[in-house]
Amino acid sequence: MAFVITEPCIGTKDTACVDVCPVECIHPMPDEEGFEESDQLYIDPDECIDCGACEPECPVEAIFPEDEVPEKWHSYIEKNRAYYNK
Image 1 (tube, rainbow, N blue to C red):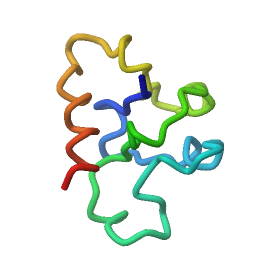
Image 2 (cartoon, rainbow, N blue to C red):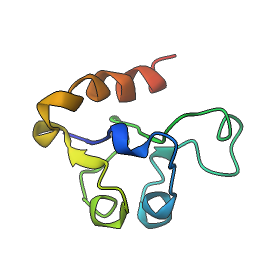
Image 3 (spheres, rainbow, N blue to C red):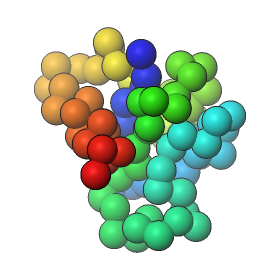
Image 4 (spheres, rainbow, N blue to C red):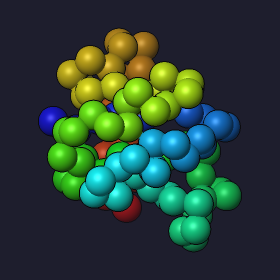
């Protein structure tokens, strides 16, 4: 299971979650190509170690364990996966 970033991140892209991730699985990072164009940040489900460090750091409460994503934001589970399957 991985964590998923949902709708509240859109337009915010606060990188506090990036700073605490021990495996650097949240992208795009501010210094990466595509950061400015991206509407939100994404967690790589294959690299996420399910440590949960990112969740309390998110100022807009956009990060959830995959099995706890609110129903209204279930589409973000696939949106996160699709970002890494391009």
